[in-house]
Image 1 (cartoon, rainbow, N blue to C red):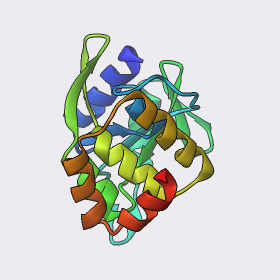
Image 2: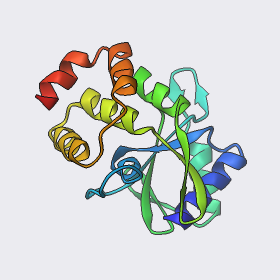
Image 3: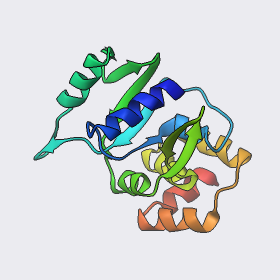
Length: 165
């Protein structure tokens, strides 16, 4: 994955994508025990024209580098299926704005904070996310004040309570 992150850092340095951060299940591995996942979710700012997001420049740049669109919206970069996503909600935008710098295999990257990852799983409210929340909380306690602030600002306190009790 370090080679994959190097390519993504290059995309950001070239201005092909804006600021990015890792989210999803791979984001969680920076904080808790690994969980099974298919892809690397890269949340980033992408060129936009009105309401439409233009992935063309990103795909063209990656094709020049030898990476082709693999399966649906995924592009295999150094063997890792990567999905580039614009932040779809205010919570995910907040997570991207407050991402923290981490290192993987000597490569610097940004990752959503643990508390944001937990809140996003509560927001998506999928069965697999509820399971991941339980597993994550068994492994590492979040900063409760930070988590409560995020949940409150994004109207998720009740949902969090239902998921965790």
